[in-house]
Length: 454
Image 1: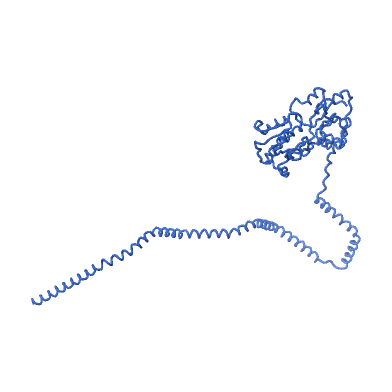
Image 2: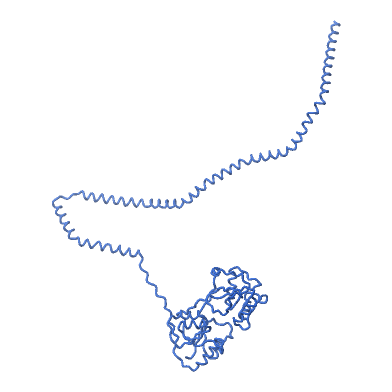
């Protein structure tokens, strides 16, 4: 079949120097880039479940740029600051230069292979055998780097991202003459999009041994792959298109899409509607037995007429009927009048119920408030007494040195006057006696002189 439209299951390249664009200009084909898989990173919670401590590793192995992105993303989410002493071992130079997005390239220890093959990275890892390596990978990966597990190189595989199939929708056109697949998950995504895929005259090109195995397990035909003469998938595509330039145009096979979702069932009628229907049907059911009992009712009516002719009509039943009507009307009016009162009581009851928790909390808080008020009043009353005692204590402290000095001075004062004043008192007593004697003598002398004069 002549190739006109090609589907490449990869994102569109950013640079215009891609070999796919060269094929478009060389052969006039149309190349459509549509990835069959999506890459989703693991959350920090999911990564913690693996119990892999990042800080215990001194070097990191990178085989893809997606591994670089998700490694630094998880380090940020886990609040792990990547040290400046961390070493990086990359499969190719492009991955090594991609590290500039996250680190300063010239100040780090970065190693990469010159060939770009993963096998040539093993000698570098063996040379730095004292390092403990962290190897970020996907959950479904083609193991390019086969690190020996004999203990000569200490490493830990850490799943940091997963591949998810990006299914082709029913609205997307599928009219391709060639499909290029790169991973086993891409083959699975194609089968998920078209469960009954028929290859027919569609050419399929595949890259990788595991992708070829997955293609064969699903019963599909391999048309071309990479080889020593065509080391890249673009070179293999070039050879295949050139070999089929003169092929005639053949109609494309319309692939059977995955089944569309079934329409939602009509909801059943609600229980209320069913009840209404039953209520409407009830009178009909009641009417049927009445129709059957009509002969009996007619016989009873004839008997009543016969009895009525024999016995005179009574007026009492009419009175009873009127009284019954009056009672019913009175009851109806009473119930109408009582309705607002009932509503008011109901609203009061609801408000009382709502207020009950607040009352309970207030009742619980009341004793505590009273106790605090009593304590506050007691404290206010006790303040002057406390101040008086404090002033007394201060005065007592100030008076203590004076009291001590007075106590020391008292014995000296008492002893001194006893010794000195005793003779003075005796002298004054003698003087007083002598003075009294002199005065008495004078008085007697005057009296005698007066007598003699007489």
